[in-house]
Length: 374
Image 1 (spheres, rainbow, N blue to C red):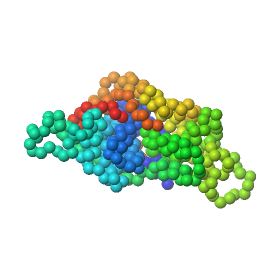
Image 2: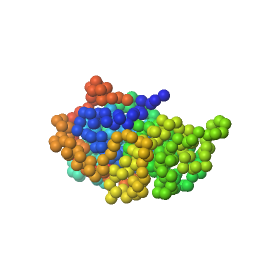
Image 3: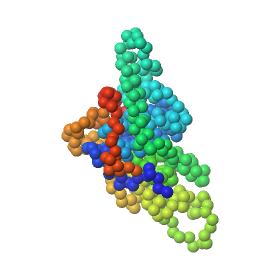
Image 4: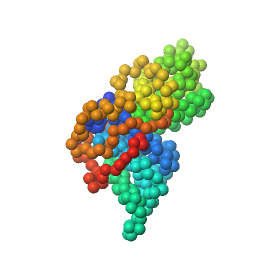
């Protein structure tokens, strides 16, 4: 049964951000990547397990399939996803602590300067700077709670978010591959959350994609191409045998595809997922992410015929300024135009339009000076 959270690639052309605002697909994917980067940094600073951060990142992508990035700032949504994940993943953190760490990352201030409790009645006993920080944290707490209400509605209270990492563990156990392949695949699976793969493909497709790409990276430029690694295997001349999780051929480069027994339709999805990941890596600013350079040298599968999604991240702000010389009426400057800073390797718009939008009250929308940490 098809999950309501698995969208066709063409749905990225019809998100609320693209349809109802000046966003392009490239700009939205750029800001999604920055939002997930901020989410991961926030979760790491709070000491959350990676499983909670992966769940929060999946919710982040689902949220923006139903709401526009011009209406909800990516950092507010990321903080709300993290706070909700601390409850569903049983790694509870106080709202105040989430808001303090979030405020510290947004403003670039030392978290130790932000009080863990609201000031007492005699506020004049505090330093003026500390008082300002405390008031901003109080405001951010309200924003997180208000955004969480919209998040719960967008998710339809469906908190299940399967991860490709669980599938990768099965692959690692089934075949004793070079440990470098395991490390590469694990890191690529982390990076997959900076792309919309988690809302485009099931976990098995993503896990296979990460494994195949990791094998190709470790084997080197003179090894089998991605097309050869994911091509449909020739029919066997032998009699049918019971299904097995052992590779059907001695060709280790085809292990992941044969392990899952993928159909031609599944292989086409793996091809699209590989091309999206490689396009994402190629869009990076190599000065900020030199470690992804080897991956950008890998040729994508020729069987993927999807439209281009990414533009070079260093050019996305310029593309946005060319498409809109002035901001649309009613929008704020809460999403600054800036460069990407990461350094680590089904509702339709019609349905959204039919429902009254639940916006954050203006009283909670005081503009906060934000550093470009994502």
